[in-house]
Image (cartoon, rainbow, N blue to C red; front, side):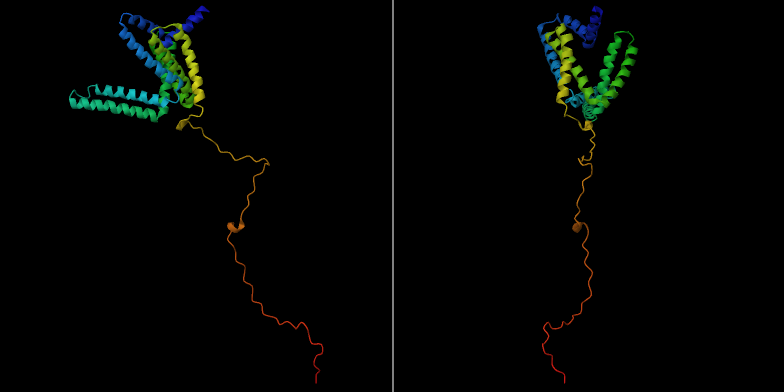
Length: 279
């Protein structure tokens, strides 16, 4: 039982980077309080962003995709600007800065509009790094970890595109809960078990249930289900009969003209009693 607990705690330590944080906090002990306060402020920001991710991950997912696209575009533009293609003249430095800004805005726009690409990349990154670190617990081969992580990342990316809503909720709950706990550990500069092992699962489950409850009627343009309109059911089992107004349905036909009738002389109603004698 002790070995199982040690394995579970070791997994959480690797997943949350608790051992690295412990070394970092011991390193901070040699600095003054101003440096520690600076990292505490950084921890508050990380905790706030993690809570947003944990409880509002699905609603803000397009925003996160645009942020990731912005960062990718900025990095790409900075790499092009500093690759030696542009010289060090002031005019071309301005062109390099404009290139960085333009690629950053373009990446943000593409990631926001084509959010399915962002869904795939986000799920790919989550699946890749999760499996990478899990495999790294059992082997020292970086190549094997990378191959297995890539296969897992492609699989999670495809599943995320097909079932994007539930996958986004689960992934943002997990990543947001871990980020919030990391921020709290930075704020208090401690890796106690209450922050490292108990609080992350609680936040993950709370984020999942809150997002699932608050996004039942929230759908994006590409996520609207296909509705099939069915004819109404009739209690008698027969279709209703409709009445047709024949006067308006068909044009009126004029009756055929009848031939003229000649007048007929009628005999007198009261003939004389004594007819005249013939001579």
